[in-house]
Amino acid sequence: MKIGDSGQDVKLLQTLLNVLGYKVAENGSGSLGNETTFFDKNTELALKKYQSDHTISGVTETGVVDNVSLILINSELNKIYTANDNDNNNSTTTEIPQDHPY
Image (cartoon, rainbow, N blue to C red; front, top):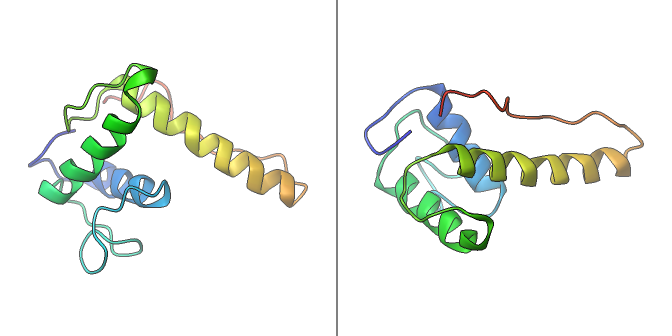
């Protein structure tokens, strides 16, 4: 995914970035709970910040979603969900499929 793309994958990406603390927007379109299906400049900037903070994990700051970025985001979300599930004595986890097309 890259700037100009649209679809439900973009909305999921914006949600994931927001949940991980890389706010697409403080309020309005793109903010937590108001994610959109359009990969705009704010989405690109939030993704670049995420990528910049994770260069040691092999992610490069491109503003484009690649496999390395998806795997790392998936890993971080699994940690969050696993921690929440353990708090609730529930062992279910949520994953983004590793064979995702991006």
